[in-house]
Length: 219
Length: 172
Image (cartoon, rainbow over all chains, first blue to last red; front, side, top):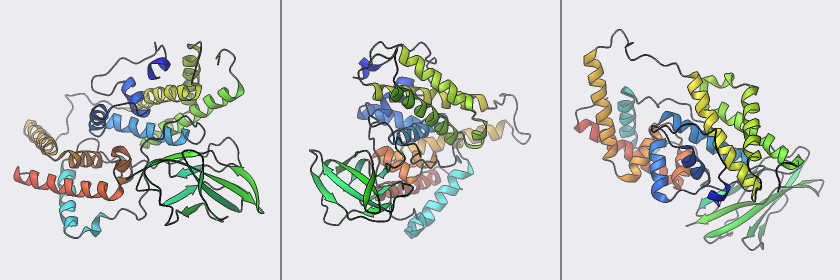
């Protein structure tokens, strides 16, 4: 399909051997690189300031576009950790890591010091009363721990449903007033593809329904 | 779908992508974010339409637009990065810098690179991504690792790197 859809592209910038080519970016963003190609691309991205920026921009593009374009590849979005990152809780490793960081920062490569980009999700939506799903989406290791979505103005409750790949409802939550709910302990999803959605309610009446969001459980 | 009669839905999709691209370019522009103007969004929208007009038939319009959006994002980020770069000629160096210091810095950089290359594959990936400023969550996503795996690989990889550099006579 990729070849069918590749446009005639007279505007293409000349390839720069120092950076990834546009077609490589396109295939990476569409999950079309095989493993060696992807590994090589990521090796370069994590060694190149400019390509790190492009990678972050494409990650943000994918996340933002997923809110309004269902054809966007799901990608490798994993569950957000429940606790904040606390390297310093690692006891003996903490001193070693601190020393390592000091050491590397003593003669930093040029790409160190960029601000971390927090990307996740846009306010773009087709229907103002349709909730926008946040997580899970994409690949989820060991199953989702929590379902999260954006709030809808005027809604006072939400209901989450999880579907099998064949469309069977596996779980439906009670109406809840928050914009996140923990997955029940007995949800027990096997490895495979699933979908979920969330409906917004006002006074007990449904007022909006999110798009179905695909996620894939891997174990 | 013939694209010479774009419907409202397609028009809205293109407009959303153009606005989104402007935002993501601004996100990665760092201190130069304020220089991202409306013209970026306008240029992207024109580029998206121009690409669409080249195709007589689009079998999968939405995913096709996503592909074009990817391409335009790459171009926009690169163009902005290059327009805000302030190249320093090679013959201009800091007053305290001399040939000795330059050689020393170069040797250290090569030693760091050599040490990183000698790390185990996953630790090397984690260390490179960490040093490039990616967060644990971004690294998890990049390589498909669970949270604990990503965190452990970063910590152990950085520890290995420190040991290798010390063995090379480089210490912080």
